Image 1 (spheres, rainbow, N blue to C red):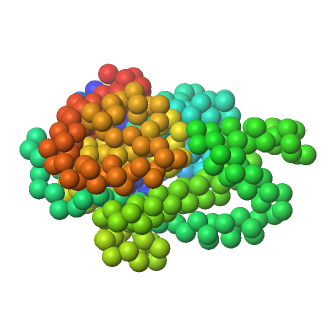
Image 2: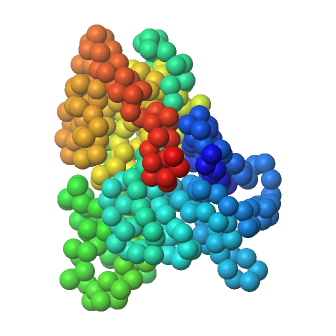
Length: 387
């Protein structure tokens, strides 16, 4: 029997990391893999030393900082465990440069976006392999019946005020402020463009071109506020356009009560909720609205979580999502650039219960078949040679 070790060391992001680790452990165990889990909530970090000298077929962590951890003699902690290490990163690799640059001996990365995978492969050649591996949610009821729906349109995610991000950009050194603003402008004008593509396009016009090329990932990391700004601006802009068109919205996450959305009478706000409790809201929602967090060729677990709980997902499209789902059959794709059409589409669906249910159930069946944790475990077993 294959043996794996899963670290669950962080409780940030509404405890989503802990949920993902627990779900992955359970699904691997159901598939016949022996799983040991080390959780920060169950013991001090010093207790990780118990794994020094032990062997596993794979070790996993989410948004890990473990590759940076060293022993007293300066050697890497992970090199003391006889196993390939898989870092499952949940956002753009630019946020993980300080970890990804570490040269542990058997380093692998799983990520949520094909563009992220290519970025890692190009800029971190010491990493042995990179694979696309998507997070998902669960069907909390485990039945096929369409549930009672109390929420018209549901959106989950944290509110970040893009104006404050803009202020932070303005406090950066002059060169960094200039480049970040240029990146934002370039990506806004080219919605399919990644930040790394934008920076590459800017290089010929920058005096520091040669230096940036040599240390490209470091400059991407330095310009992280571009990614932060774009996500924050688009999220508020999209939801405000719906609110102004009187679309009934329920928002769940930190910060919304201090946002401009809180002023609208038809907007309901649910404060931050533990990740595993979010599924009950998907189950209560007729429509779940998703906006991709600048993943240009990837997916977000919100999409599958909504579908698995019989909620019709409306999301901006990526090439990956278009491969997985069919527009107006099991999902509804919209273009952020054409968001003015969304209010009419949403209200038409809310007024057509039979069509809403049909689309929702099509999405449910497809997600149940191909995007459950059991399906993810099967893929991971193949990727990591655990069969």
